[in-house]
Length: 182
Image 1: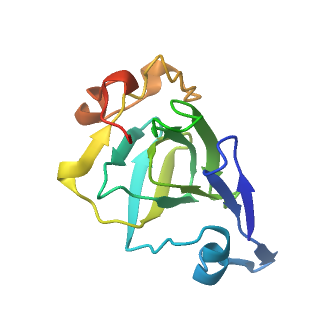
Image 2: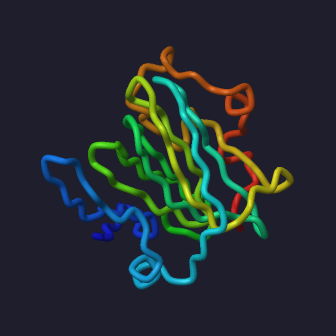
């Protein structure tokens, strides 16, 4: 596995080694000993999976302490644009974002530490999105930030009229009004 820092160094692309031949391929999608050498002190407690259609945008989501979550995300079917926004007020990258295309084809994964809002939009007909988290879901600590916050200025790579959001995600506050990591 290759660990590649992004423009925000704590958000890391993980490129697995893929062994393929005419039968198909094999790869290790997660190996704790290798992962913990690069990103120590993480213990994942839950795996999640969602399936979404073209244009579905999920996010931007996060949980506040003490239930903040780090995530390891990947796409097993289709293609998404994955976005992480730094919401740590003491960070030099506060309000900045990283976007990475994840797909079944490129097999990349993305590590997103606690202190980041996370979302993705589906660029293919369908996408199966999988992620590990290091803390359980807590409805009382769940928060969100507006996907279209002009202060952040995310380029979702799709026309606005093709985006499909949940009612909840359409009403998230802008970053300046959100509860964030202090």
